[in-house]
Length: 460
Ligand SMILES: C[S@@+](CC[C@H](N)C(=O)[O-])C[C@H]1O[C@@H](n2cnc3c(N)ncnc32)[C@H](O)[C@@H]1O
Image (cartoon, rainbow, N blue to C red; front, side, top):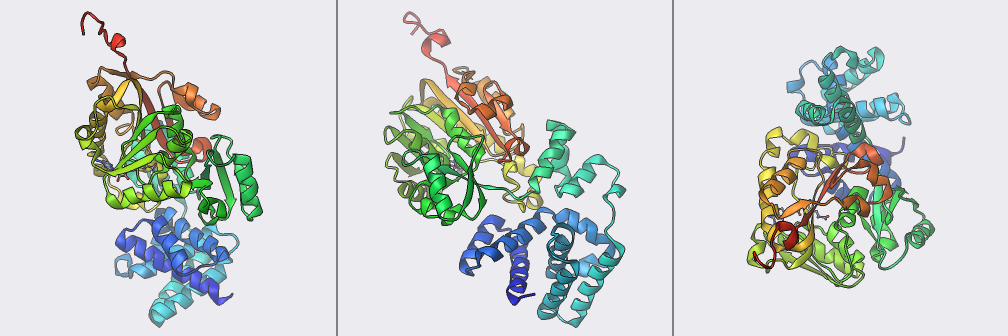
């Protein structure tokens, strides 16, 4: 066993500790550690797998460990993390022999602790090896079993069962423990998807065209953010579901479009690309440091038709004339339950009560931007969550209080073929198991023209 490998495991342990202590987002911390420590691409794979795998399976791992730990409360946090990351390797990584995983755990325990701790770690792991893991069959309640088996909090499993049914909820949970593919959007203002794929293959990446979204590519090997194609502004890292928001808007050349919650600019830049150097995207976000990310992305992609402004969109009516936009996108702040695969730590930090105040913010944002849309214009509401309270209920509450808006039945015409079977008229809730993409919700609404509101020359 080479010493580099040991470092990877120790780094994984340190990362897991930081994620739990600081509640920092796993994806951000992992990326910064890889860059800071100049971890090789080969070790990056193992490190990512150990950190994400252990996080994704945390509750299952704790269930497996419980019978073998006498006094869990007394166990230091890092020792528990070490046991988790080791049992993860023993259960889920075929290529790591159990004895190698145990040996390295004991060595780390000796270095970080003392002989006594190393003895405890050795004892627990060897007993598991000898006696085997406890069976999940001992959990009789189906929701509780799903929660432990797929490592999701019980409240979330119960919520999804009540909203989507047991089968779909089970599929969502099962998808959430798998490693997500990296996907990217080709900047069609600069190149074609075929040409971009060829360039990336020449650079040594394994990529393929997405069967779902016409401008998307899926990356099977490598990190596209490190490619020359990325640096030259030929692509953006973006999930395939997120790309559907710009399709839903039905962008036409020359349009003036408001993106009310825009940072870091994934959708704003997509919309700007679809405008092919015409028209304008006004991109608002609450935080200055995030607005800078929109500007940086637009600059990298060579887009000059984006104006990024730091603003609370609830105040947007004080800054823009009524009816000044052809289309508006509200990609609202949400609970993010559709992106659990990418941020597994979210499963252990989010509380059900966190979800309650979101609908109010979402409705306030919708209320604020609604008068800024031209009559006949399109308002797209989207979230990266799987929750009817923030999706269907928010939209239906908005439509109930805004008679000048209606469901946009033409939405399916603008969506890629593969998405159409999952449309419910003017909206779609993409579940992660449909295409292996993030969970995402989109609804499209039209602002009625005067005559549809019963306003004629005589009544005006
Ligand atoms: C889902 S993210 C947007 C992602 C973005 N549309 C993209 O595709 O890259 C929601 C954004 O809304 C911003 N936000 C939250 N409340 C806001 C408000 N009142 N006004 C403007 N932006 C807000 C957050 O800072 C966050 O960047």
